Length: 398
Image (cartoon, rainbow, N blue to C red; front, side, top):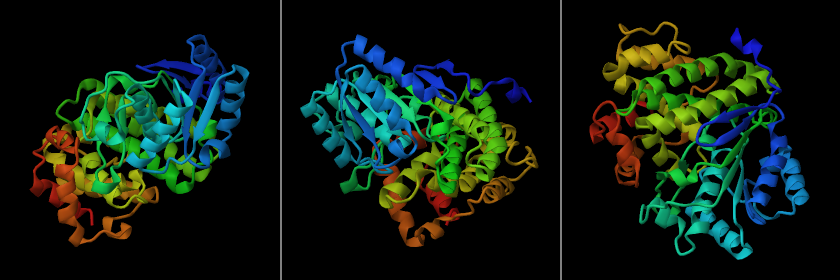
């Protein structure tokens, strides 16, 4: 096992578009990052976080000490919720402007990171608001520097140019992708991830699986995304059961964080299609629904829908979680094999378990086609993303 040759306590520099400090103890690099920010003339910044995790994980102790050491003033917006909203982004941006923030540190999972990226745009465009960004009323070309301190092993947001927010009044959950919101620095420290709950450990890892399944099968997929997908799925298949068994297993968390980070790079290149386009309406309507859980519910039906078009790729990348899969497998069997894996890691949920019914299908379909940005994802699916296909995926997921 080549993994045994890696010292998980040796901090690696992984260069994507973002400089990622990766490994057990990487949070200590916030001191070096703060020094660099100070050298660049950054004296004030806003810290974006949820209410608890940034402190409970111990991350804040290091961040606060580093900022004080280098005389960088900060204000903390700690009200980011799962599926961050336009209202919260606008509130945080106003606070940041009034404070004179010149940069953003985002601490948390995908939600604080995405909200932080959004605020970073608004710092450069004080006359704009979150709705302007997420309804594509303008295309930003600049943003304040972003430092992403990642506390989960799922979204890959620390290494890519994507962000997501919910426009509450319209039940929209669009996604944006701009080069200006690649984080300048990121920290992936597995020891900050050991306090993830059992459910979140599963859900965020399933998010990473979905990222690469879509990126390997979209119309813009490449050999690069297919190879990354196989690596990510193999790694999650191997280490998710270990993390479930022992939440404090740093080796398991290390490799799940690696898988998620590479998953972020993968879909930065291959983009996303059905699973994310159809999940966004789910968690836009039910804000309490975990994004990763919504993806898990949809994945088997999406596999079934795209199987005939992409069975060579899917049978290759899914082998680690579905050993019996092959090109002679039927579409229905392929979906069932993936569902069996989801059940094996304790996620057997269906849409009806999350409060959805047949009566919701038409609204969900409408949102999939009217939410800004989601039509673009449907357009690059490997089969035609028409209403009939979308409705069938939702219906089969009930």
